Length: 428
Image (cartoon, rainbow, N blue to C red; front, side, top):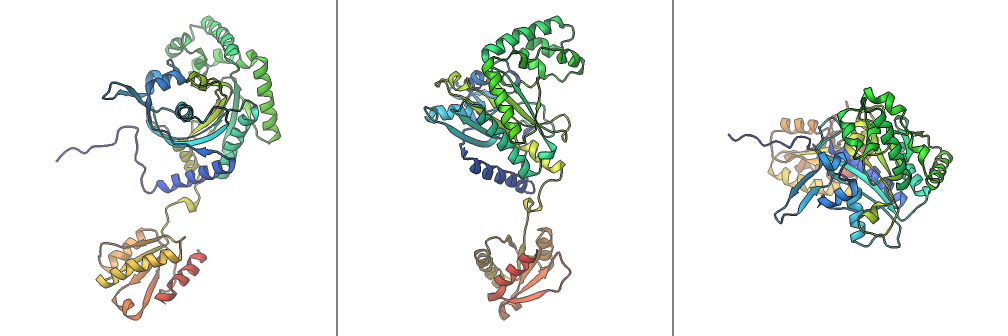
């Protein structure tokens, strides 16, 4: 016998008992985006490698270590997308969505990074991304945060998450800050770990993200980016925080929050939680005013965020916040004994679905004894089983057997069955 072929490590199947929870989450997202006036865009999962090198930055961990990159048969270098913002900008530019326009867009789908798989973080993972273009003021930054906060409220997560903010300022201000930061790190080079020494000459801001406890004191004494902001960025950030306070959104300023992608400028934010251990970030984003121009378009402001679906669903499960309505459900299981009854059951099932669109009815197929059919009805989780056999066909009746309640079996005329089921389901 041949060896079984298994899924690639870190790329997981979504099983039938899990998919209703994902569908619940996706419905929440779709409803929220419609309420805020965001339109869905769908991009391909494979892009030219140059798109990510140019946007994310060649010396970031994603480009250096994590991308799934390959040459196709034409010799072109292609990459499975590791994030969605660059793809969204490319699509918007290519399809003329940005010139003299404002756009509010959102997307969802799989992303790919070759990281060490762990709970809540996989090599194929799913993100929801939200992007807005053509608006310079802090009001759109605030809208992004308010939109995400409304999602936490809808999911019951608001008491379990915290908003962290920072500003990266302009490119010029960040360059001056970079010089001050490098000088600080060089003065403490004996404390830097190997990864930080490598980043010192390529991306020193990312050293601030280090979780190495041996560097904690040195990082706490590092220059603060907030102290090096240009005046325009300072005003932008002050207006943003004032609007958040007016809206009743609590936040903390995290001077070490820099984000891992090169394209960010000014506002950056993260929603974090303590409920998942070290994997605490559930949503992150910020402003990227230079990215459209960097990818060949005219200067266009942009801001957005992304959230990992696997991590958010893990958080909902950890906190027991999955509503019962989001779990798999079968209301009625329709059994049939004999060929004639099986043919009639097929038609009866369709008539009942027409009459009761909200009912979840599963039809037994494949024959079997009465006992085996009732066993499958019970396993389906249905509240009741409909019994149709030769005697029922002859009398024009259907039996109703209650699987979850201690009550007597009923017999109901076929032409009254839909009305009776409607009443019984309303009692649930």
